[in-house]
Length: 387
Image 1: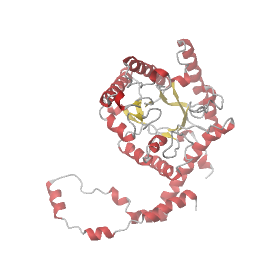
Image 2: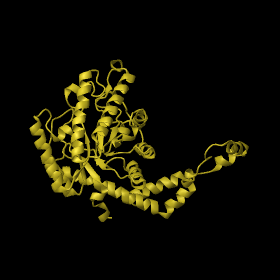
Image 3: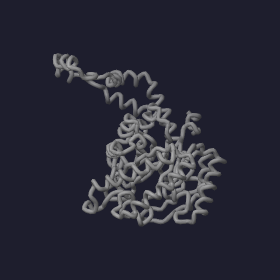
Image 4: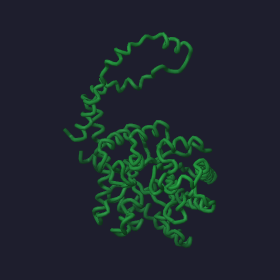
């Protein structure tokens, strides 16, 4: 399996500038390690076999700096991409760090803040297009409330929609081949966030002016924080053609947003997630939005990055073994896995409805059937554990 665990560009593994390079700062303590220069960061990615890099505008260009300085910082980064072969896989805007966003960005009660947030995003969309990023992620970190009395939810959603409609139209007007991906999260840093889950975001997208341009960037930790199955959410996003990007990390249920190394906690859940992504033909970035432990430093932060990719590849290999195992095929046949793919009634017609109404079923006979799920699930565990 050793060759299978070596990352290659075709695996499309990507990391954000804020991930491996996270300083270790948290709400209770200052930084524990120095920052990584963006160009050194992408050189490090090339050395460990990664494919892509993503960024917030403020990760790459100094916020509030004169335009010539920002241009020089961007040009230096572009040169690094050209020299290493690392691609810009995604871009996003920091609409959460500066104090002006304390009440929200697109949904702030201050119209001036809302206008600035859209302007800031437009300017970084220009940068994303220049760097060739195909996807633009929108994480509404400050879009929410602590006090329910502070905002009318319908007004907030209308302003959220207004912002996305405007940004989509801006990209179309500029001729940018960019799609947008909403990143849901239930809470933190706000007490309650707007568009908190995959389901909320998918329903919201249907009301936009350009729904074909907007999909999802779901994150393992965010759905897990809400106690939901990330695997099931991603499966529905794929089914609806809305998985534009994905953030891989790990999380313990009921905790704050931990952004742990991918595969470090929910091994079984991650097994099914990787199996799903590999079988679905998902061709987007496999983006690791996670951070090294705060007590790591030096070479340890790059071991963290290698570990994310190694675990994904190991789970992909286990998934292939699982699907090719004759015992699994037999157990799935007993469970009727393939039977679920057979249409139940097909399209409606009066004739089909009449035939169904005339059909006789025996509830007692149907209730007698077993599905063998215990044996099937044990085969999953056996395969993961290698027994």
